[in-house]
Structures are given as C-alpha cells and as structure tokens.
Length: 118
Length: 471
Image (cartoon, rainbow over all chains, first blue to last red; front, top):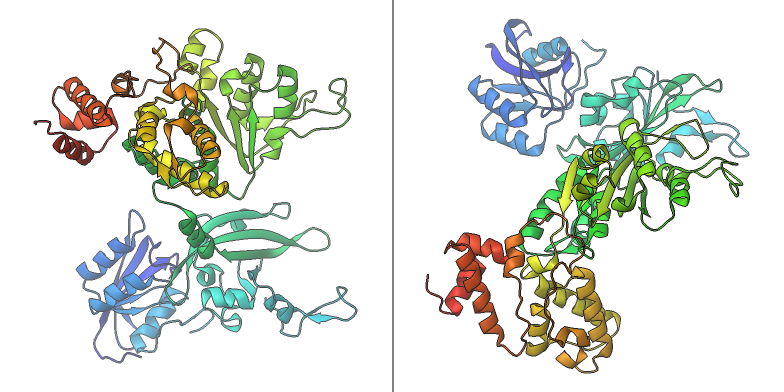
C-alpha cells in the first residue's frame, strides 16, 4: 500500500474503459495525476501506432510517471521499470476509474480484480 | 453466472458425480465461459497455468484471466454462433508469475439440448515442452532432414522457417536427388499446419484418369468401377498440406482443375457438380523447366503464376562445395551404425575420388554410393576398391547429360566444377587448380571467387595460404 499526500503521476494501460489485460499489447494509455483522495487532477489519453512494450517503457520514462498500472507484464519489463524506480502494479483488472481511485487512496495492490467493486 | 460448487452431473455413472472435482482431474486447462465471454468456471489445470484461482475470477471477462494475445487480437469466440465448429489457434499468454507461455487454444461452442448456444469451452495447452523437444532433436547444419553448411544451404535454412510460417503455395525446383521431398515435409512440419495431415502425390506416377480421381475424388457411379464415393487427396489433406511432386507431369486438363482450387479453395470430385471447400496448403515440386514448358504450351502460365508465389530452388550437389564432405561423413556414420560395421572413415584416395565426382544424381546418388561402399567394405576404412566401379572410370563429360536443368542459379560454379577426372592427380594440385580458375573467373576478387567455389571467404583465404597462392 502506498500512502502519500501529494498528487502522483500514473500511467494506466487501457483496453476500452478497462485496464488492458496485456502490457505488451496495449495501444492506448491514460496518464493521470491523482490526489490522495482518489481525485483525478489532470489526465490525457495517448494512442500508440502499434503495440510495443519497449515503446511503452520509453513513454513511462519520458513522461516521468511514478507508477504504472497494468494487467499482465513480462518479468523483463517489470524488472526494467522497477530498476528505473517506477512502481509497477500489475495483474490489475477492472474499470480504470475505480482503479485510479484506489490508487489515489493508496489501497491498490498487484493482483487486484475490481470488477463489480467500488 | 456461476457454477455452484455443489453442481453435479447425472447419467454418467450409477450415481451423480460432483462437477468441479471431475473437471479438476482433467490434466488439460479448461475454462467455461458465458455467451458474453465471462468466466463461469476454470479447472485446476488452468489455475496452475495462469496463476488465478477459480473463486477470484468467476464473472470477469475471460481476457483478464487468459491474458492471451488471441483474446486481444482475434478472439474466435466473439464470432461463434450455435452452428460454429471448434477452432484451434496458437498464441501465448502471460501468467501471474510474469512468464510468457506459448499455448495452443481450442474454442468450442457449448450448446443446450436444443442446439442453442449457451456458452463456450476454452481449452489451453502449454506447448513449451513440445518446442523444447523440437530444439533438442534439431541438429547443427540442418533443417528437417536436410544437411549442409555451404552458403547456399545456409541461405535456404534461414528462409525455410519464414516460408513455413506463411500459408502461401510453394514451388520447389531442383534436379533429381536434391532433397525436394525433404524440403516439402520440413516446410509442413515447421508450419502452423504441422498437426494436420501431410499428403503426397506423384503427378507423374498415374495415368490421367486415375490421377483425377486420386486427386479430387470421385462420386459413386462416376465411372465403371466407382462403387462408392472417394474423398480424394485434397480432402484427405484438409487443414494440412498437399504435396504435388512432379507437377510438370500434371496433364493440362488437371492443371485447370488445380488452378480452380488455388483460386476458390473448392474441389469438385469426378462425376459431381457439388464442390467441397477444403483448407489445404499446396506445395509443388518439379525437376523440369516450367518456364520452358509454358513456352511449349505444355504447362499453363496462369497455373505457374499461382504456384510461383514462393519459389525455392535447391542447388545441385556439385555447387555446394564442402557439403559433399559433410554428407559423406554423415551418411557413412549413419549407415555404418545401421549395418553395424566398424568403419571409421574414408581413405585419402577414396575421399579424393568421392570429392571429385560431380554427382549427377545429387544427394540421393551420394547416399547410394556410400551405402554400396559400406555394404562391400569389410575393413575399418573405405578404400577405392569398395566404391562403385563407374566412379573410377575416366569419362568424357557429355553436353546436356544432366537431367533437364531448372534455373541455372550459379552457372559459374558449374563452370568451375571438375572436368578433370584424372584421379591420379594429387588432390592438393586439383584444389589449387580449382582456386586459380575461380580467381581468374572472378578477376581476382576473392569474395566472388569464394562464392563461385561455394566456400566462405575465410575458407578460401586459408586454402590460398595453404597453397601459397599470392594475393
């Protein structure tokens, strides 16, 4: 669990309105600044011309996000982002709004399945 | 939708059996999905494969459990109806341990007693073990049963997997005995159709009337003696590969039917007006010059265009340089072991004879020669006396004595091939002469000379240094 008071910048891989099941196959991402009470201060959605785990990792670093929320991710990319001091919260499933709120409150953890939950 | 843990199956055994434990005993990963592809049930094997537990994932979209590239790119369940047939696809998934696992997935519709779609069954097989076995059984310098380390063969080994993975028609050309059959089978085994049938038919082996029936099948009563329906090789090869060898011998009337199939993927059995759709990849092979046959009106140009989507030419053995030695050693080792003969190798003179021969019958002839020698030899080394007599006779090369040549791919190599059959000449002198001829032809360019000889540049440089040939 992560507890901070300031807004944190997070990248979420998307598949429609849900967290994308695969990091390496995601073609749409949401980058948001989230407050401690789960409010989204700003957000932008970016579409990738084609799915690429390497390009996503590059985007994570250039956008200077603190955390990545995704579905399945290979160990290689998990370790790379972690080495770059990015907090990777993987195997998350659910609608991105619910997920962001939990992340903001610091209660989101790897493996959380949030369908039908608030 | 959720399967209660106490749900049971009646009618299978004398007493009802609990459903979940029964599914858990099946060692294949199985998921049951609702019509909108939410998880209804997963068995223990799927839990082990994905890392998810049953009670945590029931009711959520299956894509978040399987996490397969199939889910996101082309889920077949999305297009299935109550009359759909099961579909089998290769893909991969990422489990909760962050491992990417290659899988084979089968989707099948689940129907109620009235035939209405009530859900789907998804079966996943972990194919990592099969891929590991493929790696272990593979050998260096080889692809399938083909062996070689010359530049031409290395090029072929690099491109064959690419050819295999596409589903295009393939035309394999080359002289007799160059390995066309092995290439066709290797392409099939390396393709997505490897699980399907590989059906071969020699277009030159049967009379025209029998060939049509053999290829396309016939209907009962289509001709005298047609006592029942026959499916034909195309239908037998459904979901697999049909290999047509000696395609140059296919009669013109059957070339039309083959062309129709390549366009429409439909075959019409002899005597039937009803066509059958078949999913078959066609690989054809010939030692003939099809372009020449088109000019002579013996082969249809449009059929050649259809077959020529991917063309792979196999070089004759005389253009493959060091491969002759590699193949000699390979077959000697294999045959000596098979016949339980303690033969360790070839004598220097025997090797000189064997390396200087041009093998008009290519690899098949080389193998036959080695087999003859192994059978005859009662010593631990193959001597010239153990070789077939015709190898040691001095012959004058005849013009056009090769089988009908197909694509003179590197005719310059043929020009440098041995015309000097004087086996009393020292091998070193012969090799030096060969290098000099290649260098002359290449105007001193060593890279080109190496290509002419079928050697790597380093091999040529080493031999030039060995023979003291000035740069």
